[in-house]
Image (cartoon, rainbow, N blue to C red; front, side, top):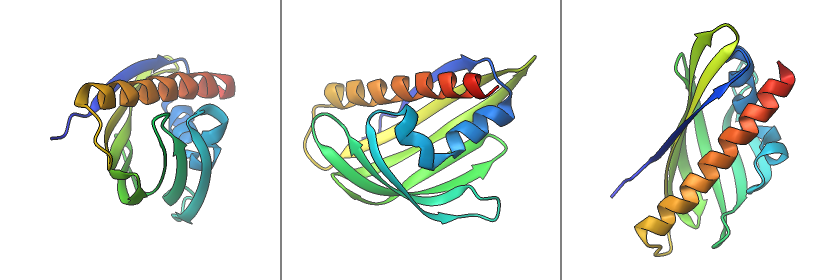
Length: 145
C-alpha cells in the first residue's frame, strides 16, 4: 500500500530560482548527501533532465535507480523506470510562488524498497530523505538568489 511522505518549506528565493535548483539533477550530490552519484541519461530541449540514473545511500542499503522526469506549471515530477533495491520511487517537487521573492517548495515522495521493511521504518527513512532534500534545496536556492 502506498503511503507518500509530503513536506513543505518556505524558500527566500523566486519560483524560477527554486525550480532551477531542483531541476539541476546533476548537482544533487552537492546538496543531497544520500545521493552518491548521478548520471543524466537524457535531457529535453530546455536542457533539463528527462531521465537520470542514481546511486543512493539509504542507510539500510545502497540502491541504484533510473528515474524519468516531467515538468509542468506545478513543478517537477518523476517515476521509477528501473531500480536495484526499489520497486517504487515516484515523487514531485511542487513549487508555489508566494510573491515578494518567496516560494513554497513541497516534496512528495512515494518509495518502496524491494526488501521487507516495516512501514513505520520505511516512512521514517523517506521523511529523513525528504527533510534533508528540502533543507538542501532551500540553502542552495537562497545562496543563488
